[in-house]
Image (cartoon, rainbow over the protein chains, first blue to last red):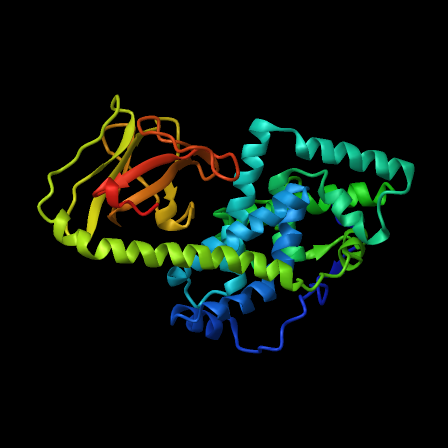
Amino acid sequence: MRLSHVVPVVGRIERASEPADRDSDSAVVRRVRAGDLDAYAILVGRYHARCLRFAMRSLGEHADAEDAVQVTFVRAWGALDRYREESRFISWLFAILVNECRTVAARRRRHSRHLELDTEAADVAAESGDGFEDGERLSWALARIEPILREAFMLRHVEGLSYEEMQLSTGAGASALRMRVKRACDALRAMLEDR
Amino acid sequence: MTELPGHPGSLPDETLPPSVADAVARQRPLATPVGADIDRVMRQVQVEAARRRRRRFVLAPLGLVAAGAATILILGDGVGAPTFEPESDTHPVEFVVDQPMASGLAVVGDFNAWDVRATPMTRSNDSNRWVVTLQLPAGRYLYAFVADGSRWLPDPAAPLAAPDDFSRRNSVLVVGDPRRSRQ
């Protein structure tokens, strides 16, 4: 499939508003490792919203997403000694979050049909014309593509991770990730241009 | 690197179709986390921190007790199970599992933050058995195997834990003196 019109991927990545504490992530991590537990709240404040957005789109249900984010931050704190400062804290954090979201989704596939139900509800809302604001068309479209494609697209084009960081977060190879992102783009374009 | 179907020699580029780029740009702005969100997480972190402090207090004298303990071996039906041999501060624990169809296997648990990349297992040369040995402090651990990066398997030869807060069933491993376990 050929991309007839493309735009550069520049300047679209949102950043959560950061708290007044301007220490780098690595500096905050060092404080936490030294025993300053309260300093960990700085990292939670910086990245909670991004984690919640990712988990919401991965899992489709707010309560599950909140739980996944909480588990992620607790596990990250417990494993902080293994964080290496040469990688960005956010990419290391997303490695834990991706894993947790996959686990929750796998458990849900065994026990429920939440995602399917959410998708059906979204279809009804979209067809009735009152379900999605313009800004949420991306969420609507993302809910309809394969989870593995959705995950790769979000990490790359919503969270702004490099492919090297995505490899760490997902365990997949760079070429596989590039293909997933490409397939996600094709699927999203088809849906978004169809409406 | 893999070629794109129908495009010999091509690679996926780093651009987005306008419709997708527009949808990404129009996302709802990220909300600033409210204090309650942060507090909720920090309360759990503090609970975990308190639990670890208690564990350190219990394990300090345990090293002396465990020094002369006998080797304990658990192997259920030859399928898979951890074996461990108490030492002083940490104990070598060998995880073993038969998964002939898997192309990769890892063990995840409390001891490695449930990170599927932290502890890959090695396939034995002459069998379908996957093994890895870890040094673990005495305590009670929950763990599971992960085949091919995504298929989570409880250990068929070990007891299962009660479902956790997420209804997940993991296996239980007790290292050292169970009366002084970490949970």
